Image (cartoon, rainbow, N blue to C red; front, side):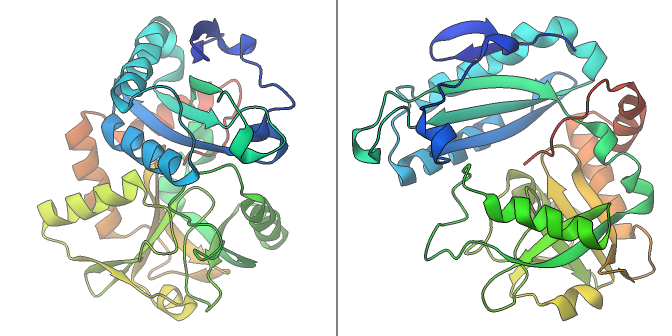
Length: 310
């Protein structure tokens, strides 16, 4: 694996040199917010939207990174540029931005923050084959955090429920992708991906009170307007997913990923549907990359599988 160039606390380092202080609150108590963007042909995609979401999270949790959004965007673009000479091996990158509160026994006295921007390979092997076969969703008992306790619009490191959801899904299906619910049993999201389903030609997705405001999620709303496909926010129950014509996940790395089984039940015809194909085709045209073909090409070449995107 190349030792990618990275930015950390005002310095340019190699990724192997980035070290979080074990007494940093980001490590000790998950007191950290982050965001993950990606490139297409080495060019960032909706970087500004990712930076703006990061800074909304920072304002909510009251961490001052000591950088303006413009500076964070510039640093992120420079990280991409510094790693361009070795991009051919990876195809494209995830760009990972994180800000911890720093050291301190009490949150209101902690600091200074640790700020990092890194790249990593996308991890195509996790999902490349699923464009053909579809992912297997598992509705788990583990709940999403209540927005009354921790607003899910804040992209943060406090996600033990996601870890437990992954374990629970794997107990049912080793290849399962967990789908969480809220306290009332409404479907919410996955562990780093948003959920959509298609009913009668309309794309439906949970409202953003209980889910992350995904940048890829917003892209589906934009594509729906361009393609003339209605996209609505709705309260969705397992019934709606079991009886849907199609379902899919959206996330930074795979963009749109069909879901063909949920709780061992086929969704629709049991194969990827036409709406997913239209969304992937339109997205690929906009970014100038055949998203599916790229994943298929680079998946066998990966030396180390990366964690899931966000």
